[in-house]
Length: 385
Image (tube, rainbow, N blue to C red):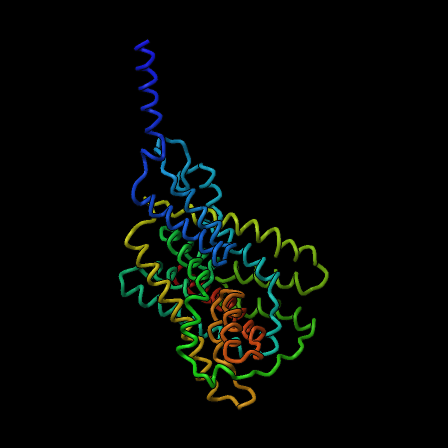
């Protein structure tokens, strides 16, 4: 009987060494807490729930402690299920598919009807190159600095795509940072918009956009593809899929394909991307000094991009006639967080003039920001890839 009890005791002791309780570190607990905060923000305040819930739950999955004895459980263990799913991030498969869905759900009418709004989207990309320069000064190499800087475009798929090519070892921190700041658009951008604009500027009423014909909508993705990719061929994976998705939407004869791209396909990829990006924050790999620097630089990049868009409109207005002036509150929408940054333009604008609807105007620089961030990523990849 005593031998049997000893046998049970030894096996129980061995079993306990495999449990999460025995292998947990303070780092695991910190990351689990952050994952719970992400889920809380998504549910309680509806901060990008489609992103934060998969990422937050992925953080929980990625930080369940286990004994590394070849069980192939972790996302960084070759052959594990999570590692196989993570290849879509590491190899850059998911971002172009996300862009296909974005293209299929995006209406470029506001941009087509007022092409000068493209300049606001271009101006906002200053945040990317500003953060790139600062990252270089902080000791990151050029490839790492470029991957960090792209966070300023507020475009998670683009950040993942570029970091997978230039700085795969920093991808987890870059991806989580990019999606975190996308979710915090209302918190970060609104105070900057109020700070940099006057009451008089906030109530500027813009002319209603002209009606765009279906022919123009069909021509736009074809012309946009040829123009942008001939200039920046390295942006082809993202730009090609973006404009292809938009052509599916606007052609009028591929409705089923467009619905699939903007519905089941993008939803599936968003789930896989969010979950695996969250799981990549495994404490042993994620909690580093570089990760803290990346979060700080990401915030700075996003702030610079927002300020650049607003200040550009203020300067641009000096050269426009009174009836053609642009409300600077749409300058924040030059970043690529579609449609959240455009929605913030609308919300802040209505605070000062309840009848001034800026959403359609803000969508112009907003979709231009999507194109601009992909072009910026293509430029950086072309030089540094």
